Image 1: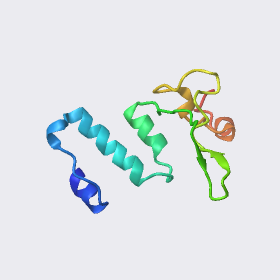
Image 2: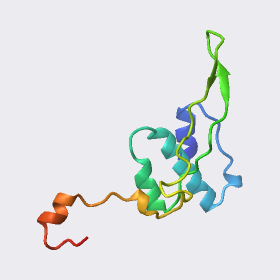
Image 3: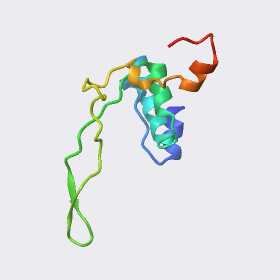
Image 4: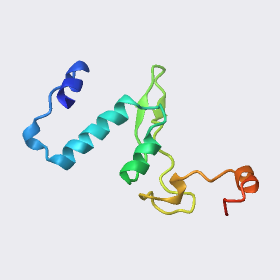
Length: 110
């Protein structure tokens, strides 16, 4: 099925002999990221698969039409706000319960 999806996007087939179960799942998740880029699904995948995003600092440049050298806009958040490395199951991947909800619902505790 993955090769069928790749063919529809004019990509070459993957050789199934080179894939075990884990590598196949990773390839499917990569294709999912490509298909849903910018639509807000990445955080849910990070939480569900208990993985951390891989971030690399961009340091490439290119020359634009005017001949000006321009830095590539890449990842700029490489660590959590407390300075720790990006890691699976971090508290920073969770959204807090809104204060109004805590104040109005006696069954919730801080």
